[in-house]
Length: 451
Image (cartoon, rainbow, N blue to C red; front, top):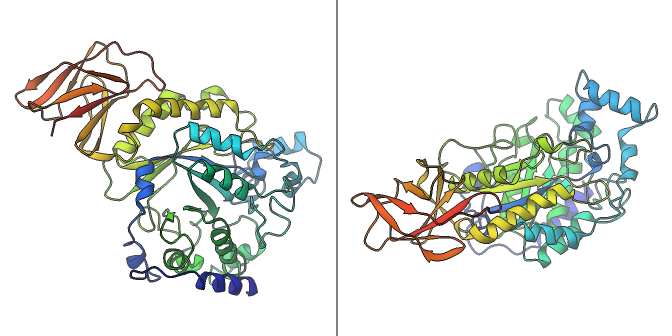
C-alpha cells in the first residue's frame, strides 16, 4: 500500500489539463477523443519478448500449457521431460534469457525501415516477468535476472530517437501470482493483487517510461471493477504525464472488448466484415502459430509478404490500424525471416505509403471487378489499391464517378494514365502500364477529380 500511495502522490503532482476532466466511468472515458497521431500512423510493430522466448516452444503461453491448464498439454510435458532435468521449474528459464545480442538501435532501424510509425513492446506478459526493473516484481524482472538491463527503457530511447511512437503491452493478470490466485479464489471480491501489484506497477511504468500506447491484455477473467480500470484510465487521461498523447485499447475487463476504451482490438487478428463506426486495430503475427519466438517454426507457417500487404491494405481501407508482430530470440535477435518481412513492408510503403498514412476510408471500401481493389482517400484524392496483378493491361473500376477533370496516375510512375468512362460519369477503365514485380505484389492508382 505504501508503493501505491507514493505513485498516487506522483500522479497528483502532474499538471491538470485545461479542459474538462474525465470521470471514472465508461460514459465519460469513452467520450475522450483519440489523439490524432494514432489514426494517422496506420502501421505499427508489435514485439512479444520475454522468458517464454527461452523454451521457444509452441507459443508465449508455454508455461500455462505446461503447468497451468488441466490436463496439461502433453506436447509441452514431453518437451520438458526430454530436454530438461527432472524438477526443472519455469523460473529457471529466466537466467537463460540473456539478450546478449540485443542492440536497441539495430531493432529501431529495422522498425523504421518497415515503415511503421509506432512500436509496442511487451513490458509484461501473463507470466508476470517484467522487461524493466519493476519495484513490484522483485527478482522476476530483466534487471534483477536474465539480461540484467532495462529492456523497456533501452528500446524506448532508440525508438524515439528515430521519431517513432513508443507503446507498451501490459497484462493485467498473472497466471501464477499468489495474490492474484487468492483474489480469484475469493471470486474477485478481494483486490490484493490489484492494490499491491498491478496498480503500483502500472503507475510506475507510465510515470517512468511515458508510453504513448498502453496495450492492455489479460483482462477476461474478472470485471473492470476488479481491475479498477476506470479509476486508472481517469488518472491516465486527466493527470498522467502522457494525458494528451496516450492511446489505449479495449481490454480492461470481461465484456469490455469492442465496447469500451480507446480504440478497439475486439479479439486477436480481428477483421470486421464492414466499415466499423469506431476506430480499431488489427493485431496479427508473422508467425501464424505464435506471438513469441518458436525454435521450430516453419516457412509454411509464416505469412508471406503479399499476404501481409493484402491484410494491411484491407485493414486500413476499413479504417483500422495494422499492428504486425514479431518474436525475437532470447539472445536478442530479430529472426532474419521476420526482418525480411518488415523491410518488405517498408519497401512497399515507400512507394504506396501516400495511400496509407493519414488516409481515411472512402465511401466505397472495396470492389472486385477485374481484380480485388481496396479504396482509401486523402483530401481530394482517392486511391485504388490492387492486391493482385490484373490479367491484362486494363482495370475496370465501377465505384468512382468521373468528371472532365479526372486524372489517373500510378504511384511510383509520374505519367498520367489513359482512361475511358464505363458509363457517362460513372466508372472508368484504366489503361495500365506494364506492372513490374513490386514488394508485396500490390499497386496503387491515384484518382483525382472524381466523386
